[in-house]
View 1 (cartoon, rainbow, N blue to C red):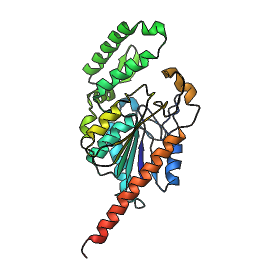
View 2 (view 1 turned 90 degrees about the vertical axis):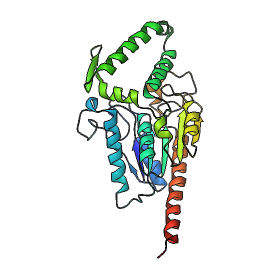
View 3 (view 1 turned 60 degrees about the horizontal axis):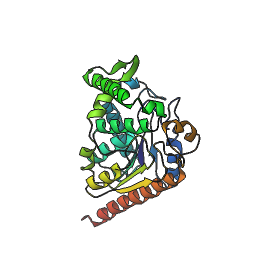
View 4 (view 1 turned 120 degrees about the horizontal axis):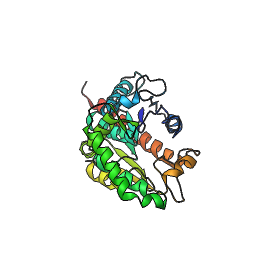
Length: 285
């Protein structure tokens, strides 16, 4: 069985908000089910059928929810607790790293994750997105950067769950906790097999971090930097910017990516179960 963890924001079990519909959950669950793997996916706090206020939820709250979901999955009577994997996309990849580092999982798939402190990742993302903006906006790089630095400093000084930045409510606690989180601490503690995938046209995380993931994971990681793949798991052969998302989201998740994930997970979790059964046979009676 596999736990699926989506990205940031008020996402439902399919990875969707009302305005942005990534639609990852359903096709991935169907592909995994075809390989004999059950999937647990859930609505974030304040989304879908889950009560709560997502802006008041911290990064650590999201991790606690993921850990509770993993325990529930492993304890399900129809699931082998020794053959449970985790898939995380974007923010979900960060929580997948933490779960794999601290709890027994059979395999972990990291989609568009990063290997660095959260603040450094956020600053890389801002520079990357700015490069795709129209020329008049790029000319304002310095004043926009100064504005962003002031907003970031203000959020760091907050002590509330929610703060208003330029009149817009921001999940301040989530941001503070995410900025302080360093995924490298988790990567060096993962002893399960790791598949890490990032598209070479990802605007939100640095694809070069794949090499760092492979270096940090004690047993190494299988990494794939997929040509033309974007952060939203669709391929874009043209000039890719943040404005391309609306067009790309009309297409399904990249089918080759789904094949890669399902084939790899089925192999890893089957090997895990087989090893455990062999150990059970060798135990003295």
